[in-house]
Image (cartoon, rainbow over all chains, first blue to last red; front, side):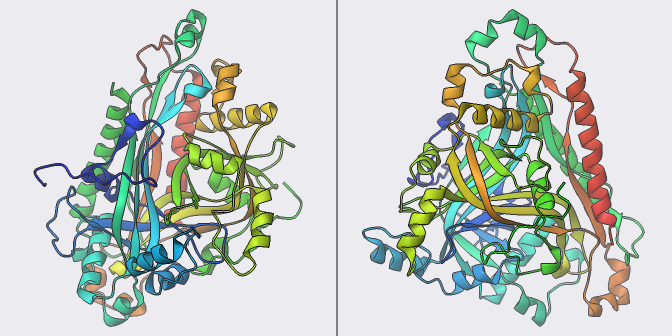
Length: 277
Length: 277
């Protein structure tokens, strides 16, 4: 950890404008939310479409230059998934069709092009249903993070390998070293990894119980009638189901101990969020 | 249900190009994925930014004109959440800064503006971790849906009320009628609901066990060493945590029976997906 907590700059596009009290710009908070999210939502503006593209992808924050970096350090986001060739092509050969026009567009565009494809990445965890006296005061407990950055294709085989191991071990810790590695030439060739250099980001976190307006809080009959509180929500990994060609009778310890631990942690986190003041 | 299964048109921006065997364009499939997703990711291109905006939001498909419509019918998406005023303003008064330029842009833009703000909505469920012999063959079981459409602010109070009830009851069934309703004038005023008219959409679904390449499947030592199969993943609602000002001793039956049922269904769905051929 750096001695002083690093924060992302608050750019006009990244600033949280509503519920500012829930906002957090600390790198560690944001990277933690991203790295614990099994599915990221990645958005970019394709040329010749009015609609942004949104793709669910797997990704992890990391530093190829300094693999031992902490979560609170400056990190890149590595993305992997069944990415449309569309996105890969844009990250490889970013052209000037994908930027909205503005007065000083051409100069800005040129600068942007050199950085890669502008992408926005969102990571969200639902932690609980917050049930209040009135529909309007209903809410969720959640942790969400948004990152803004420029994506380019990773071409250095060593960096690609670093990212592949990072991402595989985010699906299940130690899985990389417990499978057939390293990938062969065909696998290295067919795998595409994107590196996103982060320009800015923010997190938004809500925890705790319901809050209602004073008028409703003074309505005795209402208070006697409506149950208020939080239903914690968390993700569980169930008993592993062996595949058709599996020959290993027992689920390995590195998988089972991680699964049990992660399930316990997830439940605790959601329960704690529900009870927090 | 309509007699014949309705499908969304496959537009260039909505067509699934990779793993076409996992694609599904049926309205019922897509709407089912969206309506069972507690957090949607909504993306749009703001003016004066290179980065698309991505917001986690709550939403439900429905038909105000025909509330009894089935999931397989033509439906609108109603969105609610702590939307930045930015998005609301754009949906209210959509200007021509948010479209990428193209040769016939001005005419297209004008047509688009009349429809509302172009938005892309993604709904994703993670159903399992698919662990194969090699990192490259690792995968997820998942159900994801993407919808493309035009968002406008709902101004008709009756339609807004319809959407608010729809969305509240998607958080917890029957919650609307078990709280203080209807919303008062101030609540109606302060609540913003977006209606998205859907232009197109697609779903992508993966289920079943791992698949490895032939070379690895013939490697006896590898088969003897690496556990392969699926770890089912599903969302669980834990024991409700009463809030500070709750006075209702027992969690009401409509909440508890729904919670238990939903937990059972979620586990079954993930387990079934893991075992499917």
